Image (cartoon, rainbow, N blue to C red; front, side):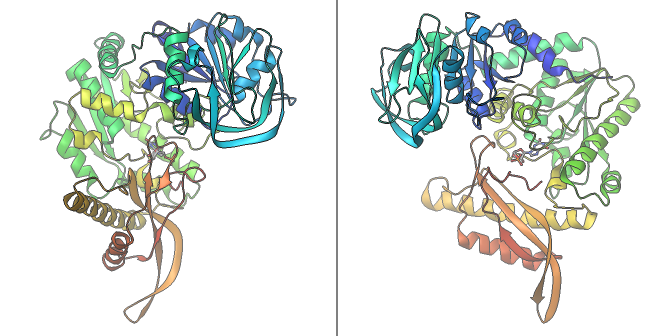
Length: 538
Ligand code: XMP
């Protein structure tokens, strides 16, 4: 039986690892801050501002970063922090709201700014400050604030300003406290990475030991120690995350590992067979591979259910039930492996302060009672690009590692409303055509232009809307579903823009879908960016 205390276990494990902590005040860039720190080869985790200070202290962080946030720090009830946070002797960097809060808590003054700054703004920095070492004296930064630091706290000096903002940055180098009004984590801040790197290396004195090869070595050791001679069951979906997790586990414990692949009937067209071809007995790996064809079971549970969160929970729960049954067949199973990654943890509301957007499969969807001793989530601390790097380090072929992501609940969240086997068939066929045509067009582009197509999306798929409309096919009236084509450009899947796939390609896709997929008479292109949309439709 498992309690959901992995987060706490993680905290203890991390004590020995050089860690910078991001304290989240609800800002939209909280994950980005953590990613940027990791890009500096320093491990970083996000915690809510409500986290007990004692817990933070126990983690022995090398540095702390306070994020932006939507509030005004002088309003009653606004997110705040204890002055003790600044007395632990740990370097602190406040960003935007975090900067204002630091000033206010330490005796400065924050007020509504006479001039609101938003967008790319030229900032004059004093590069004698450790934070701005090797930064140009005039540098473009991303500003987004209504309040400003009207008066710095005692002991601080101003180390950057703009035409409208007298305190764009302030510092107290003796106490290693730094406050920046703008957002160095956003790429629009041209020299932002230099500033963050200065903070973690010059101010916090980090060594930069967070690297993929050391992660792999350390994980294999941790897994071996944890598992001992126990038996491990891995939930393999064939997606990037669970594939990397499975190969990592197989390197660590070989024959003690059994991989179970559940075909829940919500996979892309032919995907079940493709996964089996790679990981099954005829495939590339020496794994004990079991395929469970559980389509009917999932469709039955999903019958009549329309609400997205409920669908996610049902699929997540049913998954666990299937695993439990498989585990019983195998005999004693001590550990269950899941390919959960860090954004799943944060977006499920278990990490930082951000609102629950979706219960991601494998995390929020986990039932309270699970019939295994423990769950192993070897990738729980990693962002997606880090998972891919780990995959390559493990020797997994590039085409598998760089595959576009596919959500755990699969087509269940790409069929708006009730899921039926008929709808699954429709969306599978439309999606296969769409991906085939986009891939073909992208390859032709490379052949013709000698470079990758600038419009090539990072994730693209067809989703079935729950809308039916009237059409005409031949001389007959139709009343069929509309399919939505989604294609996004994204670096981290946390924000995304819709990709500009050429019109001719889209028209080709539309023609094929209408002609070849029975049940669809309308094709739509989804232009929504994230935010306000999410990438998946549900
Ligand atoms: P959203 O829809 O939240 O998706 O913008 C962001 C990225 O996550 C994928 N996604 C999931 N992946 N389990 C997963 O493993 C899930 O439940 C899940 N939901 C969304 C999505 O495909 C996109 O790449």
